Image (cartoon, rainbow, N blue to C red; front, side):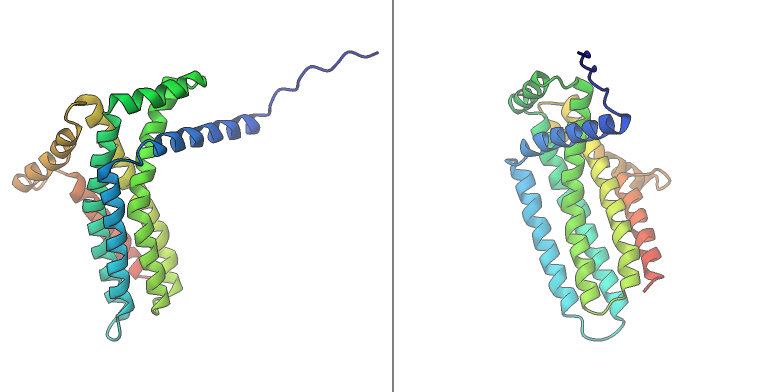
Length: 233
């Protein structure tokens, strides 16, 4: 009678997939913990209002240079989504991260499952980035779809849509990093710290235009991305 073969080691690909699944579960865990923030609810409501309002405006376009008008509406909507919705979502994320009770409950649950603290920090950061990017990107992509329905070219949509995903992801990650840093640096006043981190460079750049600021950098990025998409209209 032959001896039982030892258990086969999982392949590197299976181990990588398992790690991805665990990461997604952690992100979902911390995403769930942010559902009850007032600022995040306000951000979601405002994002819906911006998306609906500009969708009506795009649908009402009747004459003139339709591509230019639609792109102008998409640009204006993204400005509102970036600096109102994004700001509200970042403030809500910083507030939730600074709440010790909620944070300890989620951390204790994850640690009992054998998750490392480095993985927890990464998951908390990515959960905030995904939330902010979704609130910015989804309404913008819906506006692109409405633009196509109103006669804009499919080539324009195929050029603009991926660019908007990149833009929303980069802005979401940047704001989530600032929210996480604010919560760690000033857990009692995370929103004030976040506002200072964002607004101080803006005020300094107003006096010294050569110095960069987060709104300035992303405003320039947005204009370049939309200008690139306009070439395909």
